[in-house]
Image (tube, rainbow, N blue to C red; front, side, top):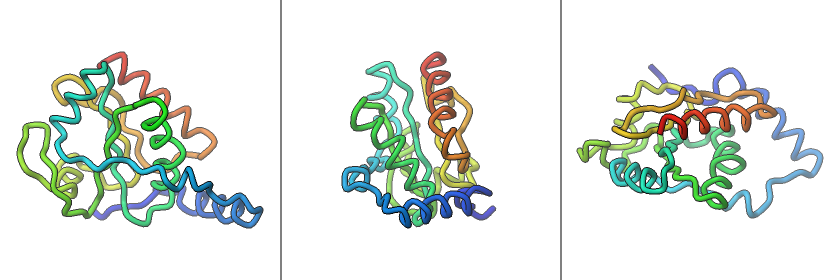
Length: 161
């Protein structure tokens, strides 16, 4: 299965971004600086999240995906920086090293394949026992509603912990 960036919403997002740039609404320097830490050890990252009674949020991203950039800079990045939400990024097609939840060495791309993800962005929510505790947020939803979908899943993940 090939990786699909942003699903059917890609054209809408690109159109909205182009319209915003045409109106002079360039992304702020602060938004551009919002990056998510790459996963280095899912077991450790989950343990740290659970220590503060939060789910581990994992964003699966693809280089060059414009909606991934929007999700990272306008949703997950600010939540990570301002609220301390435990978030890590795993990149499709990346050979970056990490370890899985069992502590076994893996690349980011191997994790993406093991999770059966073929669309970016996909946001996953992990809780006790490294189980997914909320429905995945896959692809590009309408930008006006993305925050609500994210909040809904985060609330569910916190309840199921």
